[in-house]
Structures are given as structure tokens and as C-alpha cells.
Image 1 (spheres, rainbow, N blue to C red):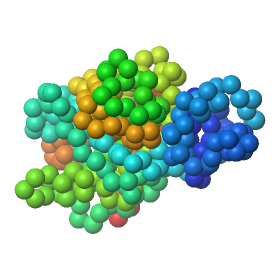
Image 2: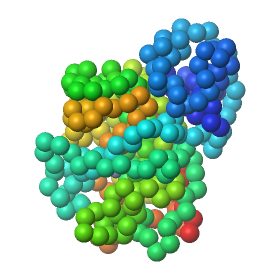
Image 3: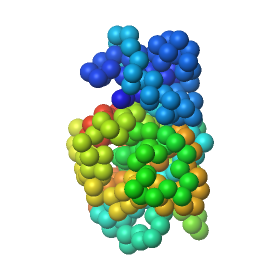
Image 4: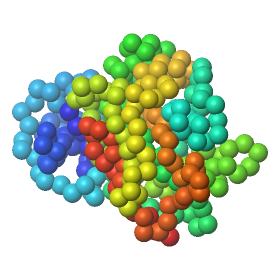
Length: 282
Ligand code: ZN
């Protein structure tokens, strides 16, 4: 099952990915239009969506999609979760607990956007697999973790490195939270849609040149491991967003370093989900 946010309304995406079915209309108001609110009743919604007679739906444009989780109460993001990326960043791979930070919710956007580059910034790309929580997770074991995940989507952890690395300690929250720096989409795909949700190819390209490519089976802390370790500290709430970390190939780790420039087109994709398209302007 795929759900999306079409012009601010919760929709189901048909199997051919060509049409959207408005959930409030198709459920006669049993489920509301707010895309974020559905996670509070995730099990009930899955049950209904799996058995309802749905109308044909209507065609839509990707540019009208928003984030499938537009207003999470918590957005947790993971640093250095691929060995080659930890190495290119000049760090040892983490053991025990991964580095965790947040991206502030006002930076969340849909999958197809135009992003203003901060003036005189060094703006970088980070394609990531993103998991959205379906049912509250508190002290969850790895074995139970997937049952708490509503689904997976594609994310870009766009990062302005001067702000991020300024000061006596890194400013991850600010450097990664300029407007439009957290695109997600194009939709949320439930875990059962994947042959193996722990092994998905992810990649991104700039103006057609591939700059990152890896597989989520290379994650140091897998999605279940992250849910287990994070939920040992704090409860993960329905609709919370988890950016799982980026593989090698970011601009910061290149020689010479490379940053996004006005006119650049960044395309980010995860196997079995879809792609994001960000165009950058000065
Ligand atoms: Zn990241």
C-alpha cells in the first residue's frame, strides 16, 4: 500500500502509481483528510484500506504532492550510519549508539520543489531512506521493530556545511533546517510491499551525474536496530520521522569539495519507492 499527501489531503496511490484516491471521500468521513493524523489510527486505517472497495481515483501531478508525514512531533536523524560515509567525513564508525540529531519540522517539504540556497553557504546533498512510525514504540526489540513502522519513503537531508560545522560543537539542527531542506516523498510505502525492506538501493544524482549509490543493507544500524536503540531512550510516536543516514559520496567528502549551485537539479531515489526532484536557485 502507498499513501501520499496530495495538496494537503491524505490519498491512497493506486498500484500503477498513476491515480490517487481521496481517503476522506472514499471512507465517507471515517478517516479525515489530514495526512499526519492517519498515523494515530494506523492499524485501523490499514485494515480499512486493505478491504475497502475503492473508487478508480484521479490522475495527479507529482508537483502537487507534499510530505507523507508533513508535521511529525519528532524527527530523528542519524549521522555516520554507513562506514564509507563515516570514513569520508573523517570519523570512526560509531559503536553502541549512533549519532542522533533533529531537523526542525519547518524545513519539511514535498518531493518536487525549488530550494533557495543560503547565500554564501556550502550546501550539500544526503540521500536517505526514511522510516515513519505507525504505532508507538517504547523499549522495542529489534525483532518487533518492523511492526511499529508504518512505511518507508525517500528523504534528502540537505545540509549547509558552514552553519553545521560552525562553533565549538557542530550545529546539525540549524545547518540542516533551512526552508525546504527536508524533502520527503513521493509517498509512503508499507513494509510488506518490499521483498526485503532491509536491502534497498538508494542513490542520487546532480544534473544526471550519479554522486551517491549504496544499499541499505550497508547500514551500520539497520532500521530495526535504530528503532530498538532509540526507543530504549525515548518513545517513538505515531507519525514520527526517522532519517536513517546517508551513504558515501556527499560533497563534503570530495577532493576538491563540491557544493550545490544555482541551476542544479538533484534527483534522489530509493528502490521500490520512487524519487525526489529538487531544483536549486540562488
Ligand atoms: Zn543525513
